[in-house]
Amino acid sequence: MENEDGQEKTEEPSAKRLEDAKKSGDLPQSRELQSVGSLIILLYYFYFMGSSLSEGMQDFMRRSLVSMSRRITIHTLKEIGAELFNLVLPPLGLFLFLLLVAGVGSSLIQTGWHPSEKALEPNFEKLNPIPGFKKLFFSGNSLAELAKSLFKLAIVSTFAYLAVLNNFENVLRAPLGGIQTCMALIMKTMYGFMKSSLMWLVVLAVIDLIYQRYSHRQKLRMTKQEVRDEGKDQEGNPQVRSAIRAMAKKRLIEQIGLANLPKADVVITNPTHYAVALEYRNGEMTAPRVATRGKDRVAERIKAEARVLGIPVIENRVLARSLYSIARVGEEIPPELYTAVAEVLAIVFKIRQEQMSVGR
Image (cartoon, rainbow, N blue to C red; front, side, top):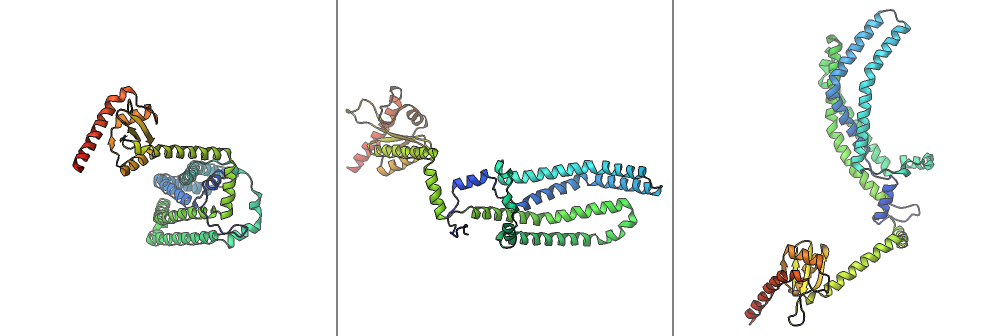
């Protein structure tokens, strides 16, 4: 894929580019998924409301035939129109509301809630027929849309034919059974046809959703020059500079802390969240001192380095949490933790003496 300057878009879209697209309302959506949502609503609508709709239509047709047997006047036509309005409006209003819910719901499922003022702004470039003509006939999306339309046409035609074929004898006999039989057959045939088509349309919707997300990401890909330009713009951003300095400071602190780790006699862990390395030199220190400490990712690094250096790693959840919250790097532990730390150091020194005696 190339941009307007002919440069190849070889780089994945940056986080900023993806965020800008989201803010502008440029999000991948599958219209097929919305269609499936509408079809599901239609199926449930016919399932729960089919009998009442059928009865209403039968009643309307009887009254209309009775009214037509009389002399047709403006008053008669008004009555028929009013009955039709009262019959159609409530179920039609409910049906349109459910379709609206299905459309909004399918959009939220695909993209989440991302209101965008820019998406509502008028874009007169879309009225230019030349780019629209190119997209219609000379783009990969137009071929994909054509393939989807042909697939849907094949599905609808096939299952419509099968629905009529399976009920062909009933269709021929329906006029003999009266209005009630005709309406029941129409509802049954339509419900069966939509139910049979649904599975294949769901498959098409899933494939289309995957394709739309892939196509959207391909559209947002960047050239090497765009990546460099964005990097320069980001470096001038005060927030980005502040974040870079904070990360550098954090990295420096980690490095300094790990540099002191070889001095430690023991590492006390939480075991997953905290790690505190202690050193103690009998006769040189009045109390054990914190050589280094860390949380989460840093704690994992401390434990890994300690094992490489042969420093004992001992799990003591309460003590590790207390040491991390009270003592700082380079400081001696507080008096209230003397006993607990002494017990840990006693174990460490005992292990060390046993290893030395075995070595002899």
